Length: 329
Image (cartoon, rainbow, N blue to C red; front, side):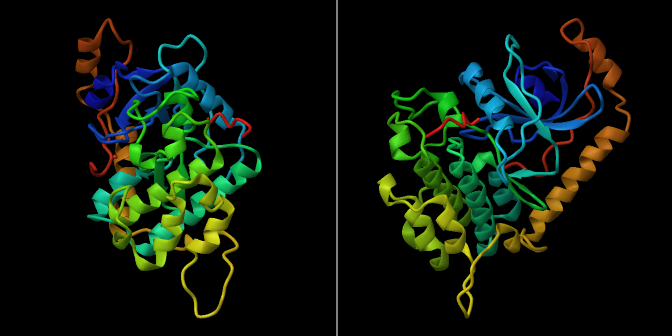
């Protein structure tokens, strides 16, 4: 709970009581702050909160728009903060998850090629579905990607638009990862699908090398062409999201077509250390739910009168590491 109080929430955000922070303290370029939290009905949620320095009105508007977007591999948005609340937030159903930077730290370095392929194919599939509906995500970065046992999830919806309006240079604004920001968006251009593709290329470069702006030779040879094509500065020369899953399919003796990203998410798609960290996170959260906290009453008294409820002992993420107005494009 110390991490939660450092966020300035006094242990609560809206109707939710914070349990622990999902992102390690000091993580750079976070387009949203994420907490595991508990609702009044006992439900556990992943709570995403507008970052300091961001536009809370734009953040809430992007989250509300994301509620209505059916796209695979996007983090679903359930409840959204209302007008007049002190902090802008949205809640998603909780499942054990690691932010991509944390997964690299747990693994001890860049992820295996098969894992990178699976992440890329799944997120490209989700983006293709969104783009087909005329929607741009505009919030993709390594920190926006969560790894779960059954596949990646893309959250932090609309971070580019929430951080800065169209026509205003966005370089250096709070919450934006400069390595994942397409040049035309950094200059203030309206977010469009090619910008999502650039950001996805940066995510894959990060997963494969540990940073978003790699030298070409650092990338695995079998992934190099697909990733570098996404990172082309000219948006007209980038592939579409729909073209990426076949390009990310593993090499095969005979030509094959990747019909669904799910085919790359068979058991074993995540490295063993990441799987173990997810299991540990689940166990720690269960312990926080079921074990009494001997210090709860003392914390409750110390917190009065600024808060009316104390929180259980923290169940930290397993290892430290790191809306979208779906507007018509």
